[in-house]
Image: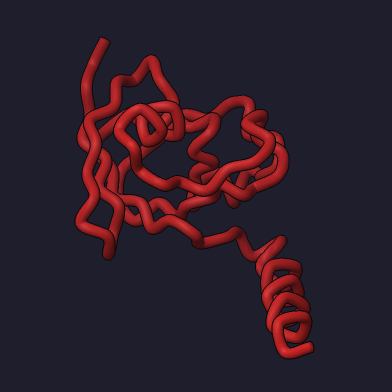
Amino acid sequence: MTEYTVEFVGTGETITCSDKETILSRCLEEGIAQEYSCRVGMCLACSAEIVEGEVTQPAARGLTEAEAEAYALTCMARPQSDLKLDRGKYPPSIEGDVDACRSNDAAAADD
């Protein structure tokens, strides 16, 4: 078992995570508020852009092959090196959906 450092860009939060555990499970153990929902690699709520480093995430079915190179689903991703992740960044395939949801939420708040 190898331990890696996972740094979350812009938050000052850092965890140590083994190559045998998911980044999300480690965040939850450390009390870091990482967004998630399904925990099976489909909903993309736990998405983070990979700024630096590598992960393995063979069960991240919600990502295309190209997206899996640039984004980690923290519920599935296991570090393969030290990492820098930018949480709350979504793959281009769903970015439009996220923007639409945010617009709908803002409109509902105005009512």
